[in-house]
Length: 205
Image (cartoon, rainbow, N blue to C red; front, side, top):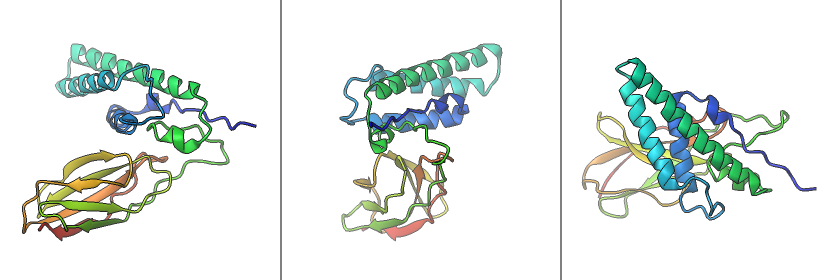
């Protein structure tokens, strides 16, 4: 009997910041993902919706009815587009949970298989290439992606981005002789993110 995998629509209940992060994750996971060749909403259109949503969030910080209404409209547009994409993924009838999860969307799990928080990633760094740090990660079970940040000294953390897997994560354009710290967290699971890893430091060569 074919296993029935249901795509979760719980993204509609996320707060605005969480919805923003979720859409970024979906864009990362769907890019170059050959399992989903005929998306009903293109990645370009999803990116445009994300930009409009982010702009509306920033504008709403100053308050006002018009800004609030614009934010609601932008949020509704994002959720509507995500529902279309989720429906398309559902229609494919994929039988492997990992294939569905590779889209960035969650799946509906039976009560006997509740989601659990993700474990904290284990990070290693390699400075073999001048001006670069290669970030090595041990894969985290059930993680859909990994968010990477780096900093120097007591400076603020710089977001490198969200990566759909543990391969080919490289920080470039670094200054030789400078010590950089790197931390990573897994994306997915019942809490959306794992805890940040311990910061690992290494000098760029």
